[in-house]
Structure formats: structure tokens, C-alpha cells
Length: 354
Image (cartoon, rainbow, N blue to C red; front, side, top):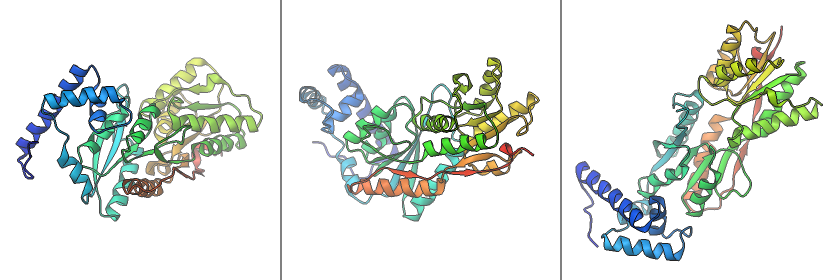
């Protein structure tokens, strides 16, 4: 096996990395599998059957491809870097400037700094969450904190099966193999809806993409509150909305197009709620007198918005601490359980009629 010098120039490192990527692509093409399958086979993942692994290993030997021993050794030493990965939706391109992301990144940076660790920020396609493991496979980080499950619970289970140290900010789901830290979204959705009902509202719209696990739980809380207070759930009041700046505006326009009476709305993020309020104002609705609005997250801007935004507070500071604690526990191969953090209703002007 050819040894690689411990110290190499950045040009040499880049060349070696490029060569390794090309070799892995060659192996995948010749074996008729994906590059991720090649990576798993060479790391002896149980997800790859013996026949496929043997074929891949033989091809790797024929191409003089070797496992990155330097990367493996690096992890055995005192690695002080954690990858924080924020997925993006190709269709919406939700920006890192989203206030919730910024709050979470700040919380994680503080929690890691307190423990003497560095943070390496990365983004991956939300449809390919398993690619979040690539940075771990290089040996550059001791583990991965992923912000959001998106729609690929199955891919995250595969990473857990490979024993990749990964902690996900998200909802607890059935048959979950990976570790999550998240807020109690069902209770949060219930509290938001119950508050609107107790304020005298009966036609409550819901804005959010219920294909996302966390939003699905908020919707579950919404439906639970309606049922408890004997209010029929009207599917025409449930509007898909993306976590982007235009999400609230598009949702209000769709709701108005449907011509369904509504007197309030529960938006699954503060950003959606704020753009919804601005759009309602443009359409000559008064908030909260005509339409009461509740958001979700309690970002810093919520209290300064006009009208100040009633919202469900997610404990972001505690979330950063909990995510880091869980990841370090996994990295040390200690049993680690999912954690559910409490949510809290923050009552402000956007839902309180004069």
C-alpha cells in the first residue's frame, strides 16, 4: 500500500481527493452501483450484501484504490470539529439567512465553543440527506448535526445503521434508528390553535407543508385542538406553504382564491406568519381585528414586528446544547436517546383583538 505523506500541499491534497473521487466513480460504473454503495462496501457496511461487497473490493484492488487510512486514523485522535449540515430544497432554495437557521446556528456555535470544539458548516440537497455522511467519511469531523429531517427518514436510518455519529434536529418518528433532538411540535400546534379558539376564532387556517415531519406534528396538534373544541376540520383551510419568504404571501393568495371564510391562521414558521400579515394588510384585512395570526419559532424579530407576533417558542438555546451533548455522546459510543424539548405559547398583539 502506498503511503501518503502526513504533510502535503493544498494542491497535492486536492489532486489526491479528485483522483479518489474519479476512482470511486469508476468502481461504481464498473460494478453497476451508486458511488454511495461503493463507499458503504469499502467501509464494510452491513447494508451491502456479501456478493456486492466482494465484487466492489475486487474492482477496487484492480484500480489500486485504497481506503483512506489517514482519515480513519484522524478520527481515532482528538478531533475537535463537528459538522453542522443544513439541507436545502432545490425547488425553493431556502436561504441560510432564514432567521430560524441563523438562530439555530448561533446556538450551536455557542454550545460547541463552550466545549472547545470548532463548527464546520455545510449544505446538502434535501433529497440526498445521506450525502451528509461524506464529510464524516473524510475524517475531517467527529460527527454530524443535521438541521431537519425533510422527507427522507429512510436515508437517515441508513446512516444510523452505518454507525455514522449523526444527530438530527427534528421529530421523533416510528421505527427511528437515528437520534433526534426536537421540540414538542404536537403540543406546540395544539397550543397555537387552542389560543385562537379561546380568542373566539372558529375558522382557523393552517399554513405549512405537512409532508415534512415537524410540520406534520404541528398539523396533528392543530387537528387535535379542533376536535377537542368540537370544531370541524375543513381541508380547504389547510394550505401548503414553504419555509421561504414568499411562503406566507402565496398561502394567503391561495386561501383568498378558495373563497373560504376564515377569521384566523396558524402559520408553521414566524417568517410565513410575517409575510402572511403583510399580504393580509395589502388586501385590506386588519390584524388581529379581522384575522388573528399565530406563528411558530419565536425568532428574535417576532417581538419587534408590527403587530408583535404571537408565536410558539422553540427553546433554541437549549436545543443547541442538547444537540451537541447528544452528538458527543454518540461519538463516544455511549447509548443516546432522542430528546423532546418543551414548547411555549408567547401571546402578543397579532392575535389579541382590542
